Amino acid sequence: MSVKSSINDIIVNYSASKGYQQDYVSFVAKGLLVVLLMTSIYSITFYAMGYYSGGLTTALTSVTLFGCILLFKTNLKISVIANTYLFICSFCLTYCIIRTGGITSPILPWLVCIPFFASLILKTIELWAWIAIVAFTISSLSYSYPNWTYDNLIENNSNLNLFYIVLN
Image (tube, rainbow, N blue to C red; front, side, top):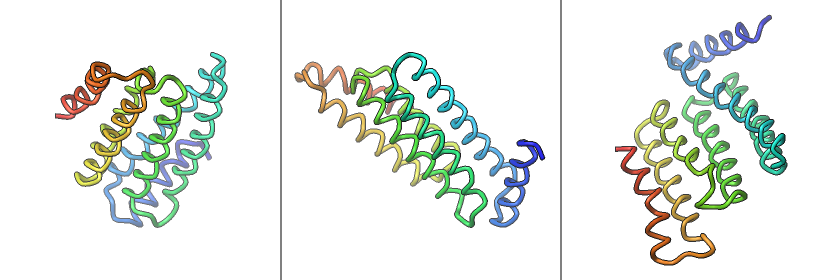
């Protein structure tokens, strides 16, 4: 049995048992698989660059994300699975952002991808919750910046303002 047929069986069985359209479940599952693949690639890349704690973190994230894919075999709603997935991704990203420079981290723009992915697969109220979580995280990072002044704070919060502009 190939991986593709196994994934298709999981999608068909889940959509049939929960009453979701098969195309929607397929879209969500394939999106989650793409994120899993990206974290696996980043894990290898971080480790090869000598950033061992980031490599280990993303490797552990890949393992837990694979576990989330197995949640499609349970009776959980697709929104619970997607929110779990987004939580794991946002936690990993926040950890890597803190370890690589906080508000000046080159990983920070990836955190903005969380609400974009949420907008594709979740309801509006859940989307707004993820927007608030990411906005709070970015604001917290800007306040915890070690050498902040009011000028730096305005400059660093421009990332947050850009985030709001892009979402609109």
